[in-house]
Image 1 (cartoon, rainbow, N blue to C red):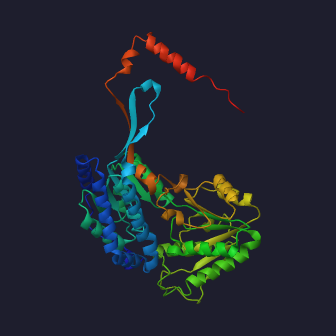
Image 2 (cartoon, rainbow, N blue to C red; image 1 turned 180 degrees about the vertical axis):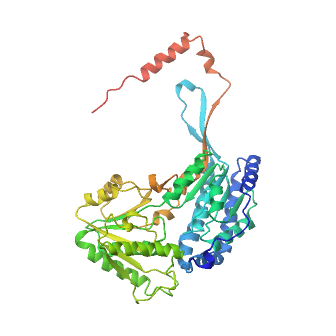
Length: 487
């Protein structure tokens, strides 16, 4: 049974259509906010994060029953402030129309691309990072000049209520608004005719969201996770790999869409990796039960799901290595120790489903080609991690694998790099936010051809058998001769 504070808050269903109508009306009244207006909105969000940092940390921890304060600051607040600063500094450049080439057939003319706000952006927020994954796409949407409606997760009610309060305090309802409520509200939210819809969550639910958006031909950005693999090259120091992977996997107790999901390790180094990984985890978290640094599982239901994965693996012959330095019991808590799994097979849930928790299968391989083939035989993940000091080999592996994003000799840090896009591919999602790509994602790239006083088409207009048109055809024939194709 879920903890009382994780039961979705019962409240009056918000009038979603009225909220959207108000935002669309406000957008039409100001369809192209200038840079000053956009910076003002970003600055409001910046100040609110600073002013409410302690409240945000407390609310998120309440939802998890214990979330490390340092993790909330490192993974939710800091990257948001960095993202706001990134856009604030570069808005003038991003907003400036881009000049493009005019073909001979259109001369004389000037051609450019204008980036116009799409209008109203809907954002469906997951529970695992209820502040960052709400406000990170919002930052990009505001930088691009849009208005936005956010649906918070019913499984993080304290965070959702606080976010609603913070947003209402700094923005008018027709600028940015947050709605709370259960699955019924979320379902109706995704059916609204937004100008763009962002959803972060499971692939299964992502398919439902995309179908709902299709009825309105609403463009979608989907961040869907998946099973993000790690390959360790045989020449990479195994202790170093274990330490770096342990840091990433330990964040939020593995409840991260880009958390390492399984390890592909050289066969003769599997035992050494497991020992080094356990040592790194034990040093970082010498105790678990009452350790404020070690995050709990978000709900009893999620904990039961993860425990089911362990029981399934063990029943099917896997070996479990539980990293519990003090041998503590967790029956009356939502804490779970990190567990390594050896001997995992494709029949086991841990290799069929996204884990999203403190469980890490370690799979041996005999050749790097075998490891690459293992990754490529499975759905394209949101993230891919490779450990190898050799840059040439790393580049080769990047070219031979596909993922939404990647890190070399690290895990998860690409999400915090403001100047690169973040997004999935195929089953792990579509679209981007962060960086310049995020600004473009929430903008309509509108091509504009501008003609001057001289109307060149008058000289080539029908009847077509005229000197100018025949001259144009001859010139084009000289420029575009048939090419010899090199085999």
